[in-house]
Amino acid sequence: MDLDQSLMRDYWHLLCHRNELPQPGDFLRFETCIGDVVVFNDGNDLVVYDNRCPHRGALMYTGTHGNQPATCSYHGWTYARGQIIVPHRENYPGCELDKARLATFDADWCGDFLFFAVTPRQTLYDQLGDAAEILENISFNIGASADVNQYVYDCYWPLAVENALEPDHISLIHPQTLSKLELEDGENLFMGLNSVWKAPVGNARLRKQLSALRRFFTIDYGYEGYMSLYLFPFTMLSSTYGYSYSLQSFFPRDGQQDTTSFSSRLLTAPLRDAQAAAALESFFASTAQVNRQVFDEDHAVCKRMPRTSWSTDPLRFASRSEAKIQHFRASCRAHLEQTGAA
Image (cartoon, rainbow, N blue to C red; front, side, top):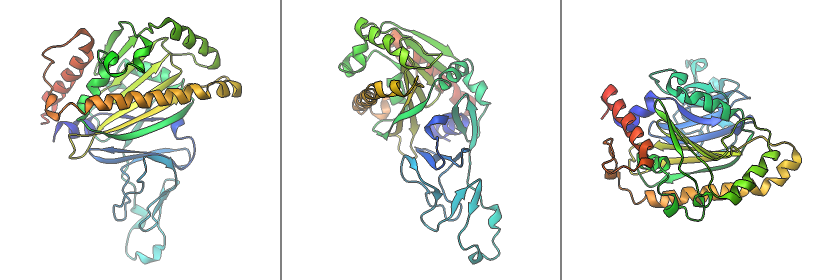
């Protein structure tokens, strides 16, 4: 088994926040190297499955997100209320239709964040370690989803992850977006396989404006600066002042090691009231637009990194701000040594 498949099968992966799928029929679909993974609101119970109809294996969803019944368009088989509903059951003589099931994955919660796994090597909380408390606190301070952005990154997934793990490129790649925060030297915290970078906002004018926005929110947790939390192996969660969070997934694709299935969702903190929501409508719209531009800028530079640019070896020339990359590669090496994955 190769590294991508092994990591996909052996670890828990953050899929979504509970409030991203508030209505029955809401779904998110992710392309991965083990096939499509769908999370679906089945009457307020979130179900995670592999997107294939148990009848003939057709894909039940082709969009990335939305609201529609879990019905296969091929022959009308439907999943609802925990059961497979088969039209014209009389046409299946001798078949044990009551045994028809979706191919579901293991699922577990950290606060209001939903994770899935195939054959995890440890429990979710053992994998998260000290990062679990941070993640729980974040999850209880998220109110809604404001943007969904999914597309294929033209680079191998570890290169996209490593780009997200270091801030040295910000001034060159994001001069009109992220660079405007003028982030100061931050600190890296390492929690087992996971890590977090916290950096104060150096732009005094923006810092004052951001501080003034707190009165619109009902939150009891949030770093007053820029924070980026990495959850090994495929997930990033970043925020400025805890007013919104960008949840990013970098999933490997099946047989496509030159590309990455990239997803980002903008999750917003709970607002004080309807007036606050009206006042911040343009703020969240601007945040979504800036986030999309930042990821497009990242994508543009990641395209310049061929698959052979990455290995699990330590960086030969590593700056102090690339410590999280060194930690990431060490985690990948340890996984290879423990599992024998190629």
